[in-house]
Amino acid sequence: PFHEVVAALDDLFEEPGADGVDEVSGKHPAGQKIHRIVFPGFFVAGRKFLIKEMPPEVGRIDAAINNAGIVRDRSFLKMTDEEFDDVFRIHAKSTFWVSQAAAIAMRDQGDGGCIINTTSGAHMGNFGQTNYAAAKAGIIGLTKTHTREVGSRGGTVNGVAPGFIDTDMTRDLPEEQRKALLTGIPLERLGRPEEIAAAVAFLASEKASYIT
Image 1 (cartoon, one colour):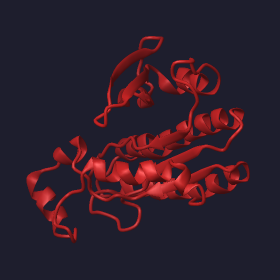
Image 2: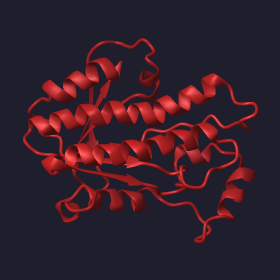
Image 3: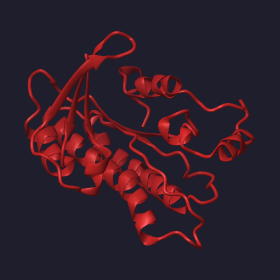
């Protein structure tokens, strides 16, 4: 079964939330059971849960996949500190938090495990996305450093840069901006989540045990 441990987006800003854990079960498109655990106030309760309190029905942690994201686009001449900090916190700092908690849990399980981060936007830069590009560049630095720190235990850490994917976040872009994006994509379409998921699943598998 697939087991997801996720945090609601608002909790990354440390907004007040109820204590405890909300557990929701569902079905993966491939038919496997999904057991999703959502933490209000994730980065207090959530990290402790990952390290010490994972219940038997969830089992061990085999991989941590960091793909939370938001946009607060504005030209850098007009961008506010809040807009920069919000995006950097959601992308880069949450990647640090989740990776640290997962790496400790996987170490205590007796193996290195696998961490996969998303790094799109760091390599080319996009108008109005100083905050986004800076956060993703930071994640590349985290990825390369964490690779060296967990490699001695057999752990792997990789970055995936899928580009523009058809998600809720990109659907919120103005139509004119979406059309402009397509002009820079050789396939002339946005990627689909399942296409990226296939690559991530490979990197999380034993077949990719020497890729880091």
